[in-house]
Length: 271
Length: 339
Image (cartoon, rainbow over all chains, first blue to last red; front, side, top):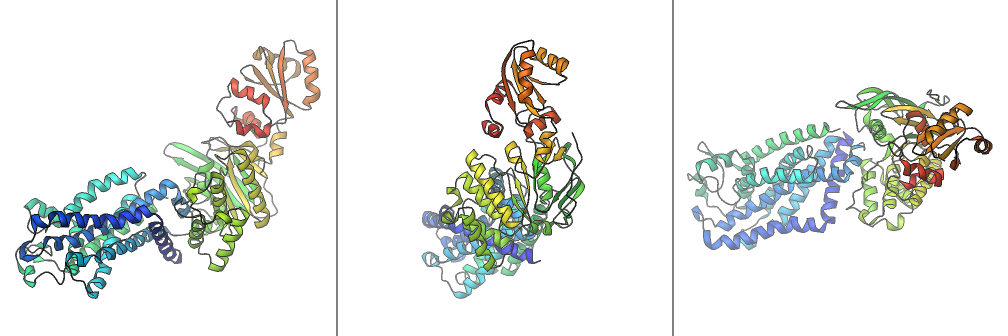
């Protein structure tokens, strides 16, 4: 047990150490989402303008991009396992007394910490998108970013434990994660799209993560009546029921727990 | 050749393997090896690439489960008590396992955290080992900036950081130049004195195996001989004489007929072992019916032992003329460098 707990923090510590030591990684992790935000909002502001219920498109997209940055970062924690295997460092970890489950959880915790840094940096840009912030929003966002990160890290680590090459991992991510990202309601509401897309989006667990973050960040922006409409721009409507934030987080959390357990089993079988 | 195993009987063995085997699919990488290593011993596994050395070390270090047989390391079963085994051993892998994006000292600190070393001991120990390995001045440099030899030294320092009882070295000087290899060995033997370490190493370099107290010669997953290097070499029956002749087969026949010596053939060279070669060779030349073009006499090496046991050289599968010629010009100690 002590080896397990120590494993979590030792591995998480290294993830953070590397994040701050590699300037290029730091720059891309913080710079990319910001570039996304600026380009999309500036580029689409005049084309789209205002969504239903008077919510500004840019405001709508802003929390979506925070969510996207968080889960892409988390999925890539799986890449760090593949990378460690390629450079041989994984052996140093595997021959140490640290438990395998501690190693997996440590990678996930490290990814969550990095995701949290990203989310907070992006949140600081809220005034630029005319979104008003409060301490309540920040405090509520933190646990949700952590749950979302842990869940997606579970997915990345499950893949990473099986992959031998970084290219293989990247290809899989491009084939699975990017399409899911685009169908997760990051850029447009999922309740008012063609039927097939609506079904895929609502089966997509990322949708619930995006929605949870959006509901918190836009808490003060979306008029009350929105949720009651037939096609609300926030919330995920299914069989006439629109999800609450808690339900969103529960979907992501349960799936994440299952993915992490699967990743631990998969990682244990490697040795 | 004696295949029996000499186990120092006074102390309990610190490593003990019995019938240890590992298959990969239908490939039998290690086919049941048995040996004991005594506390404080430098024990070597010598054999060509693919003989099963790394597979054996991986099993002993709990990175690979054995397909059959059992082993204890520091008194702990390698399957049932993995964590205790891992705490008792230090390991330097054949391929680099450092995080090149971190600094040298960060790599060591990570190791100390992973092994749960208390802070006070940790900092002292890092300083001690980095000083010993002459890396202290470069402690904050990224490992990327380190040379091959420095990386190896750092890995050895890391392997020893948590005061292991046994240090495993898998091909510790692979890919390093001769001077660096020599230095690494000075460090290792010095550390062994200071730390009362048991060292288990694998190598395919003859000269490296000479540093071992005992050597197990391994071929195709089996131990074919196990003893002190001198004993193994003496078992060949004297010095190795190599003759370069015009007709090697006729020369071999003549050696057998007149002197009762069985010779190995390789191109235009014949080799055989004979006691007191300095006295024998002049006599041989006087009485030899055909022309002898060149003569080389040397003390046998472990490669000769391997050759006599398996019919192959450790370095190449079948020595061609070129390699055979090199034998004339190289002293035994230099041979591994001419690969």
